[in-house]
Length: 250
Ligand code: NAI
Image 1: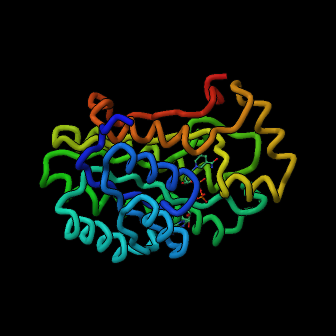
Image 2 (image 1 turned 120 degrees about the vertical axis):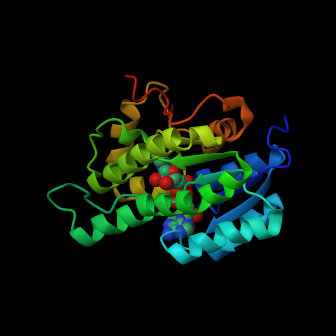
C-alpha cells in the first residue's frame, strides 16, 4: 500500500470498533504511528496491539482526559499530525422530538458533539506549533438531510459537528491546519447493527434510500479518512465529505 502517512502521528478516538478500528488499520498500513483512544479498555488495547500503536483509555467527554491524551501523544511521539475525532454513540430508542427526554438528548450532545469540541480544542495548539495538521471530525449524512427514521438528538449533534468543522476549517486555514467533516452513510458496524437489532424494519427502510443498494463496510469509510488525513487532500478544508452510497444525492 502507498505510504502516504509515513512518519505521521495520528490520534483516533473510538478506535476499538467499527469505523475507528478500520481507520486504525488503514492508517498503520499507510505508515502512520497510531494512538488508539477508546473508553473500552479491552477493544481499544486490542486495536492498538494489532496496529503496533499506543492505547490510551479515555472518555472523550472528560476535558482533562482529552487534554492529557493529546499531551501524552506528543510526549510519546514528539508531534501530532492527524486527529480523527470519531467516537460517538447511536440515538436513544424512539429518538423523536416528542419522546426524547432531556437527559437522553444531553447525553448524545455530550458524546457526539462536546467530545469533538474538546478534541479540536486540545489538538489544535499542537498543530499550530508545527504549522500543519489535518483534523477529520465524524459527522453523518443525517447532518445534511432529514432521515425518515426518528433520530432528532443524533441528527442535531451531527449537524453541530458539521458546522463546527466548517468554522474551524476556515478559521485555521492560514495556519496550515485543515479541518474536514466526514459524513458517512449507513455503515455496517456494531453501532448500526445494534440499532437495527432493536428495530429490524429500520434496516429495510434505510436500504431503499441508498442508490448503491447496500450499507458501507467500515474499510470503505477508512479509505476516505486516509485521503482526508493525507496530503492528497491538501486543497481541501472546511469540507463536507459525504461517503454515503449516494443517499444524499438521490
Ligand atoms: P461503533 O459503536 O462501532 O464504535 C464507536 C466506538 O466509540 C466504540 O469503540 C466505543 O467504545 C467508543 N466510544 C463511545 N463513547 C466513547 C467515549 N465517551 N469515549 C471514548 N470512546 C467512546 O460505532 P461506528 O459505527 O464505528 O461509529 C463511529 C462514528 O461514526 C460515530 O461518531 C458515529 O456516530 C458515526 N457514524 C456511524 C454511522 C454508521 O452507520 N455506523 C453512520 C454515520 C456516522
